[in-house]
Length: 222
Image (spheres, one colour):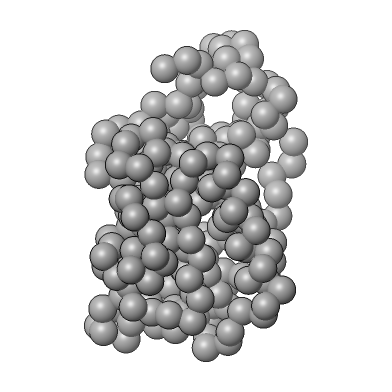
């Protein structure tokens, strides 16, 4: 299936103009968050008009103008981290659909400050800045499809499109440290172990599902 325009157009944006989110957009984002929390037992929260999860220097230089963000929180387990990555990928593309820009932040923020601002308990694995960027961002450097995937036999179109979609996913340090294998309608996704590998696994898995079409394949049991 064709890769959605939102996926092609979404790039990391770290600096934002000081324009509040319209109430209608806040309501739509909050509803999407609620749906994920209900379906996946996550504890994601949308925080608006606040920057307390960033230190003064970060606000001044790296995260200039960030006033709205999603706090990605849940249980302290690898499974929960992967699910939060999956949900975060969906929320970033939904934000793009709503005319917003986004940035998954894994390290340059205060987990305690984010949890306090959102009023959540559990582990905070990251925050996603959302808002109106000063630019639309630029595409990240990407590996070739052959470097991150292999298929037994001739790869069907859905597998090719799924791999293309994974190369558009944000990953820690843009390492794209994953490999996708396909055989028949069965697909496996393996990731090099690292501090953010479980989160990245979820982000990449979501992108493959959208690009390939969930009706075309099944994930190999791990």
